[in-house]
Length: 91
Image (cartoon, rainbow, N blue to C red; front, side, top):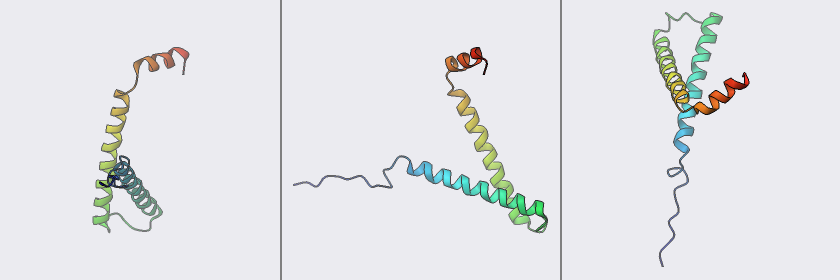
């Protein structure tokens, strides 16, 4: 008698990869915000921690690219009939 094949709960889960990517971006935004907060507070000079400054700048550039691509993808997938109906109603 053959055993029933049960899918792996993590490996075969379609949203597991998306959740990991979203968790990375949430952490990246947290690092960027913490850096900006402490730099604005005067806790350190960005020139004194050049490696951290470069790392945060790279994270910020990656996040901006991601946000622009997501915005362009959302605009492309918008249904023109719904846009027209919303504009016709006035909001």
